[in-house]
Length: 167
Image 1 (cartoon, one colour):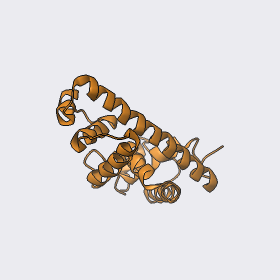
Image 2 (cartoon, helix red, strand yellow):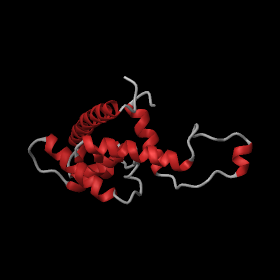
Image 3 (cartoon, rainbow, N blue to C red):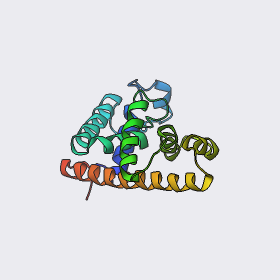
């Protein structure tokens, strides 16, 4: 049982990113269990159950956000390009009318999730002044923050209905 959806998602994405291996006898001798009463196979099964439960309830853009935020898919994940494209479409829809440089907005999305991209490089790709680049960054960040709130709320509802988190 988890205390929150945030905690359950952190667990699920952390475990799903680690291969199933048995702990060495050295680790068990020094008391490094880290998984409670579950063995590696049970932890992976629980993580898969959490992810399946959440992905049934949230839509595609919310799933992409959760993968980018918790799964670190934007840092050399196999779905990096797909997730960036889905998030780009969601952000552009929230930004309103206008002409936006795809590459610049994608860099802002990557920057939001922690990639170290200098604002000067983003400004060059957006082809605008620093002031306008900062306004567009704020728009992208606001759109992604709203998407994140919605995604975590829907994930929490799904996990509550499944009985995996305490109310």
